[in-house]
Amino acid sequence: MASRVASGLLRRRAGATLGLLRSCAHVRNYSSQLSALIPATSQCSKLTRRRYYMPNASPYQVWSRSFASDNGDKVEAVVPFMGESVTDGTLANFLKKPGDRVEADEPIAQIETDKVTIDVASPEAGVIEKFIASEGDTVTPGTKIAVISKSAQPADTHVAPSEESTPKESSPPKVEEKPKVEKAPKVEPPKTQAPKPTAPSKTSPSEPQLPPKERERRVPMPRLRKRIANRLKDSQNTFAMLTTFNEVDMTNMMKLRSDYKDEFVTKHGVKLGLMSCFVKAAVSALQNQPIVNAVIDGDDIIYRDYVDISVAVGTSKGLVVPVIRDADTMNFADIEKGINNLAKKANEGALSIDDMAGGTFTISNGGVYGSLISTPIINPPQSAILGMHSIVQRPVVVNGDILARPMMYLALTYDHRLIDGREAVFFLRRIKDVVEDPRRLLLDI
Image 1: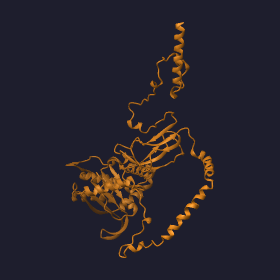
Image 2: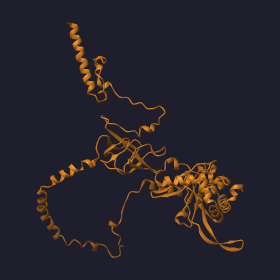
Image 3: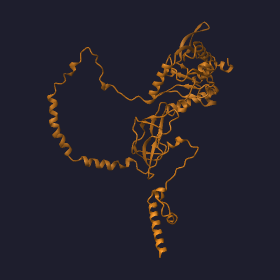
Image 4: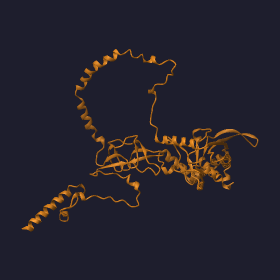
């Protein structure tokens, strides 16, 4: 008899335990055989789901993964890793709105940093339920941006019922009766206070008449523009900048391009431009004057035995300076392909932090905008920058004859704390000699 009672008690406890287990969403698929295997003292709270990550995976990958809710239907889009030198950014704008349908890895927002614009992608396909952050907020990697429901339907399918319910609620004419009673007494007092327009007499005729504030617009400065402004002002305050000028005859270089442009495109699949010629000339000049490729660091001078050329590119969002790595080991075709790739990424806003990090010397071509002459500002932490300008037909003296030649002004701004005028002039003269006679590159003279 006692054994029958103990057996019944054990079955009742096992049944209660199984009921607790079945009430948990993550163990509903367990079979009824667990009733004979799980002891009566088991509790549902002890059964937890574990997540395993590969040991060699980057810790930053966790920030870009979705965060699931209790029922596993909702996920949260978070700010991804933005680069080692970028700690935060500004939520510039949302590309979607609540109720929109999004696919996996589809951008839903843009984060503007000091250097680049980064997209926040949806971790799963679904419908945006709500936004957690607001435009203009400062966010860091891992910050939650939006909540996405994987099973919800787009908001467009629910527009009809909401529109039908709103007119029914606003249909009662009681709303129209209230303003009739309240507006009548409120309209009369302003009429009695009409003589107040005597205020303009307070301003004396000698004071300047400024435009009204309604004709002005105040907008927050983009984060990239702030960064550009700070770096340019820091450059002006740090460096002892001095600019030297020269002019170069582009006749031989333009003839070289004209003679071999078709063969160059056929073999390399890219056009031969002027920028690759000046990059090669700058590499030769930097190798002849290593001090221009150096930089001051505290009480030391760092000489760099490699040449990374930064190329200034103007975009709609501001000036960016991507870098051509190891330009001293590249030929004309490699340089042209690298420039085209960086320019395309800059125009599409797809430049990464790595594309703009570093650089030992900068070339800026203001000639594409029609600039005749300028004084470029050094891009820290570099020590010099070369400014190219527009090509203009000017009369020059050649072997005693006055001829019209395509001429370009060159400007070299350098840090006079490190580079003397002698080295700067020799540097710019080397670029002039190589551009006017490209055969010097072949003969290394």
